[in-house]
Image (cartoon, rainbow, N blue to C red; front, side, top):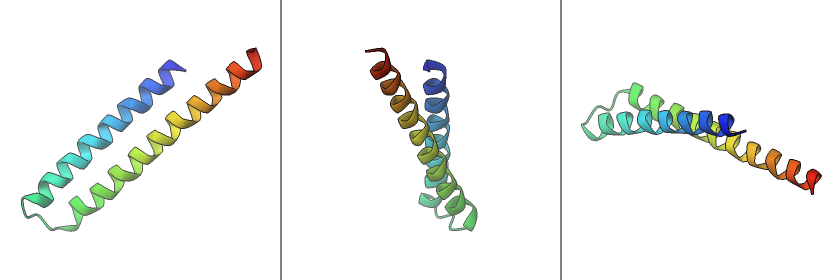
Length: 68
């Protein structure tokens, strides 16, 4: 389970990096569609990674309940 959380955290970090880069482009005046789309993609990637972490936590909790 630790590997799954580590992978999800790595994905969350990558999404944050992408969002930061897109935000910087927008702040610098680049109003093309690419940084806007990349921002939305980074948001969806982050949401997916968060959902993965939540699911892993739920599975771990269920396993602990079974073992108790």
